[in-house]
Image 1 (cartoon, rainbow, N blue to C red):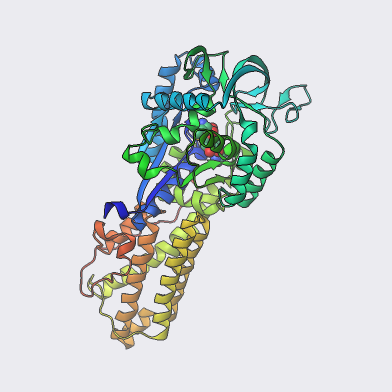
Image 2 (image 1 turned 90 degrees about the horizontal axis):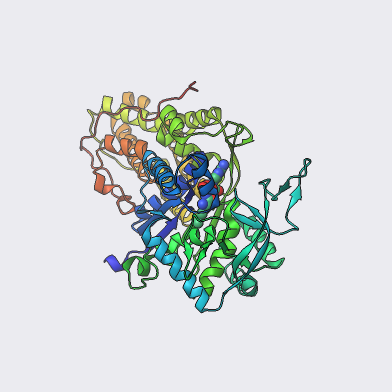
Length: 514
Ligand code: MSP
């Protein structure tokens, strides 16, 4: 049985420990968690990896500023990312830190393979470097601001570097990458990002500097202590070091590589869609199936930054408005792949309209009605009318559509579809008017309530993947056992006459809090 289960491997980027976690980090993690949940719900065996990126000049600088040695500093900040994962109630399988031995061994091994394959040579790097991005920029890319400061295209400051460096022969992978993109048009999503990467690679690839000598905080190059390995080569390897690479006999490796999807922000697409596949191809390893680049969140229209003082803490928002509410807003407000703007007003509005008015109200009014009028027992059903059959059919179609959307990572479409059936169910109650049937036809009233209770169960089974707490509370009210909440339980009808629990409102209306 075990072997037949489809395996699914999903990763977040590993987070730099130079900063406290904010809603941008929470976003990537929540997206991955939802996709991971959904796959588990379908019955797949899921490996969901997250972690922290702890080396490099940026982290070293932050540690110095905090008057700490880098290891103590990263130990502290890494904890705050673990704390965020637990506050978000994330179901990750593993949490990798790049300062762990298992990772360091993997990176050194990969380095040696690339050397043995002839893809690494030593030379001297002279060019621009941004510590904020931990990225090299060519002369053509660098711009000058009014004060004469040199900037990368995204506005981060660059400095001139001249130092001995090892290089990866990226240029020799250009044609192979282009062929690979052509053969795998779904490798990068959304499509606009695919086109962007294609035109970058078509424009010509230069060899990539992959070691630094002017600071120490990193993994040393095997056989040359003067160099530390470029933090991106180090960091990208986390996706395989967590699967026990280079031990290809390991169960983890055999089950989960290549990854099904790396979810990343649009700012780090190039590293994942160009450098990473080139490293892997050069090492003779398979390339991940997909890189999905999501957009960026601004806050009240402005870029989040410490200097503007508008960095939003996910913890604060969760404490004010609730976990499901925060997750739902992130997942639904912005089409996956697009940029979005975060504001508490927008969150409150979205939650009140979708969670309180639509979903919460559907569950609350139906379950309370059954509770009052049928002694808290699932009603008996009679024969179905055309309208009943249509609603049940629509539920099935929506479920199939949602599965299809989620398998194609169209999270927003999946939620829209779920809300289509929620709205149809609310309309069905109004049309069938069980409160009127109560006076004229009790059998018909029971049938309508039976259908609605089943639809609410099915909607909630799906919703456990997106807003687990609230959806599970509704399933608790329907007395659905914990082990009956998966996709395979979808068609199991509630049993007439069985008892359910006292209904309570699950998504109260919100107000903006100070
Ligand atoms: N350490 C690298 C990733 C290495 S992966 C091998 C890194 N870390 S990061 O902490 O700076 O960013 C991690 C993720 O958070 C990225 O996907 C980034 O896009 C995302 N976000 C950071 N700020 C964001 C917003 N304001 N909005 C949405 N996501 C953003 O890059």
